[in-house]
Image (cartoon, rainbow, N blue to C red; front, side, top):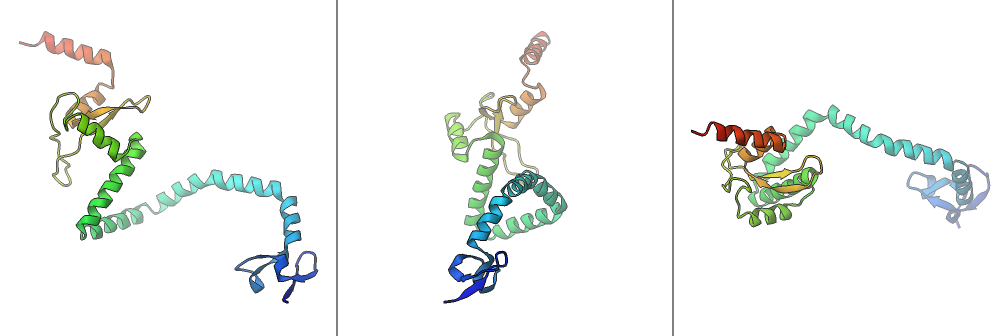
Length: 190
């Protein structure tokens, strides 16, 4: 039977009377279980306060860490995507996963929900009834329809082509501005 002396109470106790620890001698903590319990009860409020401060500080830590390593993270991401292009199947899966994450984060919908809306609109803009024609300047591929949403409530309304989405955005969802625009166009029709 192996024993160890507790660094707090000074008593020689069996190893089973100590909490396991990879860092401690013999694979156990330096304090026995009963001393550890007393130690945590006495310092409970201090531990709780430190944990609260630690949790509150986490977002700031991540922001600072991101800002300090922004260029390295971008380069790493760019390299990862470039390497992934060598395996087309994995690349397509990653694109779909990335699109799903972005849709969830920005609009609160999944890629599956986006596709359901797209299908219900027969793949065309909810306003003009045309397919998207705007192209991505980086890849020259036709963009997907934009998710139109209420900027106050965040509720998704429909999918729009780039032109219709920009028109709504430029008029700031203001119905009076839309009506004034209609009146103006009617006035100068001929």
